[in-house]
Image (cartoon, rainbow, N blue to C red; front, top):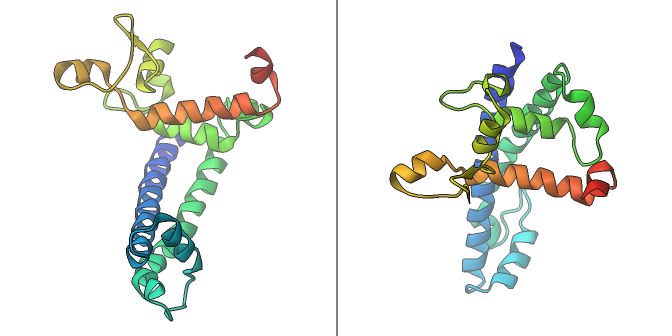
Length: 185
């Protein structure tokens, strides 16, 4: 499938922009918390008052360039997500994903986007399902659960918390939604 490299690139771009968006939001929240004397609740309430184009308060002035940058990123990220979901529509698992409660085109976009690595370009390159499980951090290594480690053991475990979190988020969606997977659980 020639669309898989395009999906992977879009996913990488989406993730980068998502991290940037999140970082900008956290910086704005920190500024509001600082202006509220360190009080988290007051800082969060102040953050909710910050709107684009209103530089009438200290918080708005402190957040204005960050908010502007975030507002430039968000529509681009959404466009990439929409395009990625359009591309996965041509793949074999698409109909299954969109027709299964708890799954979606975005789920397939995320899974295909996260799958590649140094030795693998897509799902199609994995020889066994156990290698896919290891890629997503849910394998067993010598009878133990896969986890973050240091040194040679860390390389052998190959654990990535973000990929594992993605899989657990998908699993949680399947369990929360009325459907065959929740019934089976």
